[in-house]
Image 1 (tube, rainbow, N blue to C red):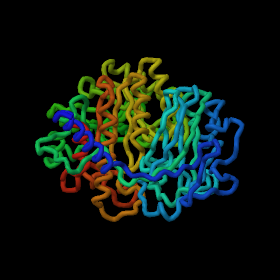
Image 2: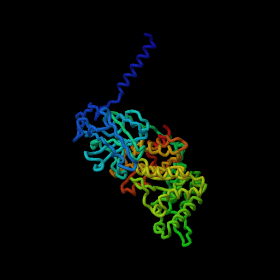
Image 3: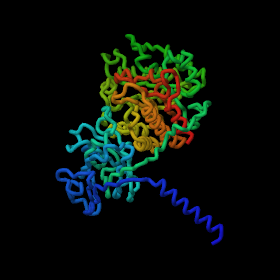
Image 4: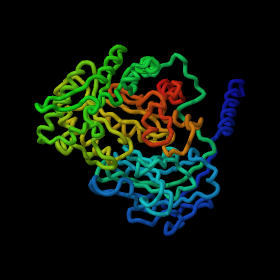
Length: 547
């Protein structure tokens, strides 16, 4: 043996030994494989009629080798996640009580059975009863576009709260998890959806490599949000008093290149009345202050918002004229605002939050009542008539994870696309430190990109105390918030450049945020602390753009 060959062999042996040394240690508990080989070791119990393999029963669409479930029906029928003919009982016992959810994974082989575009929901349920009588449910959703078998492995830490997005219980306690339910989301994809799955298992890993934000990586002192984001605008929500405050304005101009008026451009702030001749009384004081500040500092302006149900003046709610007269007033108002700022404001949220939570229906409002179900389209047309060049956006919240609301919003959007009246969509990113997961963010964002529209993550804040369970901002929660900000920025930065518009932070400092006053307990949802200091979330934003 020559020296060169000996070195090669030695190198190979060293690599092998290193792999053994650092190999991932894991324990796998197979729940079922559908062909009689499923086992339930001491860490798991079967329950009721679920049998020795943890499967409810042998269904006609199970071939004994894998389980297949089919949904044939209309998208507006049934439940979002309960099209589940199969349920697995998985009661964690003592050996899992010391494990954190970041170390526990759900693994399975899965296929979409010849129906590409099937949206699959996997739900963890906290007890033996059906979904809607339980206290807590956690959901993970993804779209299976390629119909071929693949093994997926989902960290339980990526599950978010299901059914009620307003409920603040979103942290998984592994000792509460009782069942796994698998179903298709009938409000997405085709009317015929098929999901096949096999070899369902829980995997507990000793060490899990955390990808994303790295607290040990230092950010250069001269880093700036706006200069690090080379392909899109980084925006900040402002108000008139703060753009005149040197502490705020210095940081605005240093870090951001776009502004959005938090309230000063909403209808209630500008529209003050109507005289007997039908002339509008408009107050431009506060909106002009923001426009002048942005122009003086060469900053982009995103207009927010022309029509919003929560900022409707009382005199419009009680207007006694005809519906046609009401519509004419709205047209005059939109025309006046858009015309005044033509060439100064680059984009407008024309209508904000038109769809009711948890439904695909229009939210009740005076605009719906007086102008009809096409009031959104009419408002977009009024704005387009006033300025042919300005970018027009529809803006709403919970569109990342509320499937019914998402369906209703995109029905509006698709109609606007057909009439060439819309340029982009704003996703309000009022989210939690642990919800929604990154895949849900990407899947929802793809809905905009697939329509070749501009994407605006329009109102980013990350709640760190959604349950009100903590009294102080901890190091752990600081890190978790930073990780979520990293994921948001990473998803946004991966959008094709031609569809990027802006990522706007909804406030500068924690003590400025709307979150604490709204929910009644302390929170720290922004990138800067109450002393204008940079938080880990700031570093995570920068880091996500540099990696």
